[in-house]
Structure formats: C-alpha cells, structure tokens
Image (cartoon, rainbow, N blue to C red; front, side, top):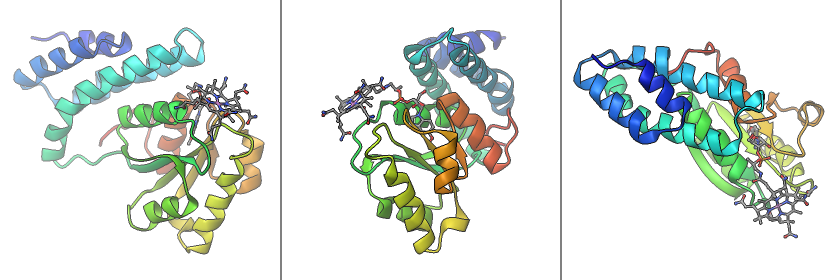
Length: 218
Ligand code: B1M
C-alpha cells in the first residue's frame, strides 16, 4: 500500500515525477482521490505557503511545488469530476493593461490552480474590456488583477469602473496584488481584497468564495 506521506513530501519538495508516480500508484490501489487531495496534497501546498511566508522557501521552490501539485492533480481531477466533485471556484486572472510583467501573476495562477480553483489565464497586458468579458461570459466568480508598475496600477481602477459600467460588478469579487499594490490602494479603488503574495492570494480567494482553508475540490 502506497505511503501517502510520500506524496505530501514529493509536493513539498517540488518533485513532480515522484508526485505523479505516487499518485498513479495510489489510484491504481483504488485509494480515495478526494482524501488524497484534502489530507495530503492540499496540506503540502499549505505548508509550502507557510514556508514561503517564513522565508524558508523562495520563488523557485514555490514554482517547483506548484508544478508537482499540478502533476498529481492532473491524475486525480478526472476521477473527482467523474464523482461530481466541484472545483473550489473559477478565477479569471491577468496583468493589467500596459504591463508585461507576468511572473508573479503566473505564480498566483499556479498556486490557485494547486488550491483547486479553475483558472482562466487572460495573460499580460489585459484590457478592462477583456476582464469584463470574463465576468460576463466566462462565469468567473473572482477577477484577479496583477500590476508591477506604478504607471499601470491605475488599470486596476479602470477595470473595476468598467465592471461597474457593464453592470457586472456585483457578480464578481475583485482581488488585486503586485509589488506596488497595498491594502490601502485596494480599499481606495474599491477592490474586495488585496494579497501580498501568491499563497496569501489563495487564502484570500478561499475566504471570498466561502471555501475553508482545506476545502479544495469539494
Ligand atoms: Co520590470 N520593472 N520593467 N521587467 N521588473 C520592475 C517592476 C521594477 C520595480 C524594476 C526597478 O526599477 N527596480 C520597475 C518598476 C518601477 C515602478 O513602476 N515603480 C520596472 C520597470 C521600470 C520596467 C520597464 C518600464 C523597464 C523599461 O523598459 N524601461 C519595463 C516595463 C515593461 C512593461 O510592463 N510595459 C519592464 C520590463 C521588464 C521585463 C520584461 C524585462 C521583466 C518582466 C518579465 C516577465 O514578467 N515576463 C521585468 C522584470 C523581471 C522586473 C523585476 C526585476 C522582477 C519582477 C518579478 O518577476 N518578480 C522587477 C523588480 C522587482 O520586482 N524587484 C521589475 C518576481 C515575482 C515572483 O514577483 O511579480 O512581485 P512579483 O509577484 C509577487 C507579488 O507581487 C504578488 O505575488 C507574487 C508572488 O509572491 N503578486 C500578486 C503579484 N501579482 C499578484 C496578484 C494578486 C496577488 C498577489 O492577486 C490578483
């Protein structure tokens, strides 16, 4: 019988190959996929987030762990979908118009995906209209805006204003982040939340959609 603590360790250590192999092995033994996610995979990502905040892990470790989580989730997800499990929520994410920085945004998207959210990645240099379209047609519950430049951060306000004008502001929660962004700025422009880093963005998003800290894919 596969020791699932090994799966936890593989994700924590960013070993995608081991994570996929152990997941496949456990599924072949008919282990419960939801239990695997909630008791081993998701707690491993929570620990990755904790280590990042404690400055024991840095961006490369975050990316490796997110990749290992994705490799394991790719095997588990079809089984969860088959039993009718719902994703934690749907997030449309992008870097605002005029801003080409996408490394942090990609990291946030990876961790959100690892946290069980369905991601619509709109890319970098995304216009307010594209975010509005994602809210209107894409069924996103969360609009996640990233900005790295002081000159582009005002694109966040433009986007929130565009959501209001399109009559869809009440349908979505807007979260913002990026190096020049602060809680004060988020409050000023009427965002629903601000997260300083990728793991905080996962915790914030879970809170906004009403999912518990471990409530991945239920
Ligand atoms: Co640019 N750049 N850059 N750059 N660049 C900065 C941002 C800068 C601070 C460098 C500096 O001068 N010290 C400066 C901005 C100054 C300012 O506005 N005050 C700057 C500048 C000036 C520019 C150009 C104008 C340079 C030029 O051409 N003259 C130009 C602008 C291009 C444009 O966007 N239109 C430019 C270009 C570039 C590159 C293309 C070369 C490259 C980007 C490559 C890419 O992303 N594909 C680049 C880079 C790499 C940087 C620095 C060095 C690193 C950014 C990064 O990837 N950090 C950056 C200096 C710095 O930040 N130290 C700089 C790592 C990443 C993991 O962190 O993105 O902060 P970060 O994301 C974090 C958090 O912020 C948060 O979580 C992430 C993970 O913890 N977060 C969110 C991010 N988004 C979030 C969303 C959330 C929640 C949290 O919710 C939705």
